Length: 546
Ligand code: N01
Image (tube, rainbow, N blue to C red; front, side, top):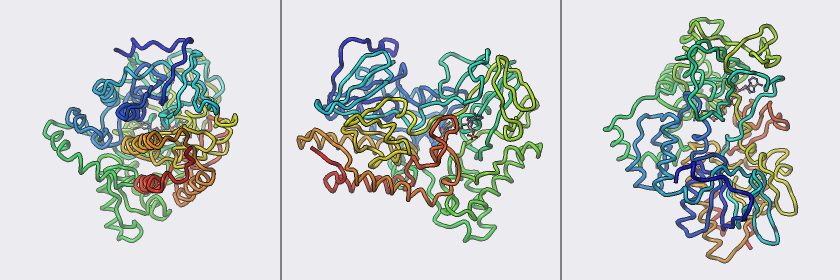
């Protein structure tokens, strides 16, 4: 059936499942497939009208991978690897969304997915050993296990600028981009935000826009993507090397194809360092960030060297050096926030029809019916694009009213930052498993590589429980406390902990998200995988099973 044929649930009967999965992005789809194969009665609820998650919602112009396509796709099915063809090394969003739909079709997933079903609340019923889900339209469902597959960057946030709803022209948020075509030719367009979404949007729409004004609060360090097409012969070579590709990704900290260099930047000669920077800067993808000297993200001296190299690159690309000054970050070193990869971003500012407004000099005072008023000017627009990001990692959990054992609210439990065991389970919330959840290596990962690990681990746990006759799984308090402390200890040495960003849990547009905390896992995917395997080897150590 097509997506349109899946009606939203109506407020009558209660569905009952062994396992309810929330979200039909890549993690929810793979989880469905695995549990179906294991014979569980499993069902997925998805807020959107079709599969794809991130790739369903983020349809903004220029959206594309910054992981190599062929390292990003699922590895679990040889058939899928044989049948699917990537056309670009960093596929654009429409291609990745097609990939998601291809998976849904190939494995006939849609028959077990209800679309247009946004979960409003989830509550644990201790007497029945069940989760009850309540949807926005009032419909309910019950399941013995609840698996969240709700994504780390899926709760878009609007800025808290006065008058934000007043503008009468076209408005879009990059993370909620409409399904209908949007045109920019002849229009006066504003973009607020210069994170990865803003950088991709700005670069793409600059090709056709009438006039573009970029409102930048904090400049970000960017590096070149260096995308190219994949021809048929190259695709065959990629297919022949998939096992090697996935094995290399397995060994990398973030499951990327870029091997980290064992040397320290501070230990090599100036010439050697410069040559290596040049080489990695010219390599496609995250090589410069994820495959650089081993000390660049932990030793300030090494980071300064890397940062100095990138400053010279930006200065060479931007003609007006006063403009270059504004585009060069001054409050953080390269790579200490998520690095947007770009394809001609800096050159956009050489265009006569593009203006950069530096909000550190002239802050926005309000949004008006006609445009944006800063402290020194009033701008009129036909369209405002909000590239203002997400309430990351915990935001999607907060948007569901989740109640655990004894009436405990997850939002309250996490009011000072998440507490989890392995980023997969939470004390007080029995039988709830969090794929790509906070404190999970998947949040800092070439995500499908880590999704496969998460889903396989959760599926094995459910099978183990069924085989052994257990009905409940819940993290023990001491295991949760130890893991949470480990998460913070591991992050402490990273330079990124000295900077505000979604990676340090800060979002100035969300109440209660002003203080830095660590919401991901910085020990790296290999170490995380090893820990998960050890827990299993010791009979699911740290979990209470009953
Ligand atoms: O969001 P962001 P994003 N007034 O939070 C600005 C992934 N991703 O959607 O830095 C003015 O990075 C804010 O300014 P500041 C990737 O992991 C992947 O771009 O807070 N400006 C910032 O510039 C990425 O990191 C891809 O001062 C305001 C911007 O909005 C993550 O998603 C592509 C403001 C938000 O940047 C999030 O990226 C895209 C205000 N009131 C995204 N409020 C791939 O390539 C916010 N801003 C795969």
